[in-house]
Length: 244
Image (cartoon, rainbow, N blue to C red):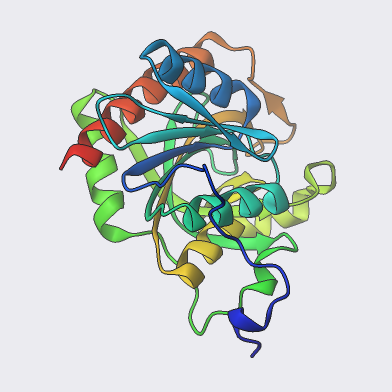
């Protein structure tokens, strides 16, 4: 196994860049990232450079909000940089397609494990399959429930090719208790385990792949309302968690 110190390019904190010591709310999708970053700026947050993404410090706390970073490679580059800046606790916020009938549009999934069909995580070898931080998972889940948001659990399938999802793949994954599909989670989970930091994910169901046909719900009122509620709840959690 190649060691991290053998790699040519290493993530690092450069002169003038912030030092992160609190919880980071990491939004992978452009839509959620825009609203969360704007909310942090309205609170008086300060913007910082972060590749093609935005990084905003949330005033009166050590928490940060950032995004977007769509797809496994960009999400991992962003996470590596955030870790180099000192980040040790990450709440990933995004969306997922539902693979099971028990998940409806706008419902919230907090995955605990992943099935990888992306090409990034294989570059971070682990001795055991990665799982989310049980401590952080419990805290975030309790915070969402306290806000009146129901949370469901299960695995997530991460793929680089959303236009190549087949019925046979979905059926096989359903048999493995995989509840949703996204484009970043397995890679982020693997890197978090490799770098020994805490990471959990919160996903709002945006579309359904559990029936005979694909049913998109990106414009549905239930989806949009859920994204707003969850994003505000997660901002509140990260601010509170960074104070404690």
